[in-house]
Image (tube, rainbow, N blue to C red):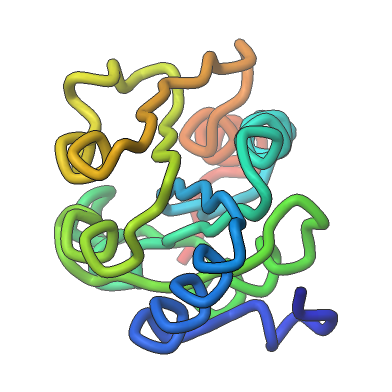
Length: 166
């Protein structure tokens, strides 16, 4: 596995080639995705649990334009390269890649993970890419959230404590 942080961050097409080789060698690939704008303990619990479901964990993150479309003009707080570095710094994360579409369907189709996971607010039947993964014999899981952790909640707390400045 890659040792330095930059080596964990890959363009999707290159990552697809790497994963295909690893899968040929019997490795089970777990995939999840999200904005991961401000990392908090909820993310750590979730990502660590996801990693236990296979041999390596790939995280697809929304690029900056995609986050703005989903969360509003004030987001992301952290730019995509910083978010990718933070995720790459976690021992449970093996690779990080980006996607710019409204959802990760095309990325999932390209990477062909064995296990697709999302957080507890997504039921397996609503997880984008589930049919692709299941068609190939893979699993789709919704992992429970740890209550009390959310990026939006952190932002609201900061704004309440310090006010919104621009």
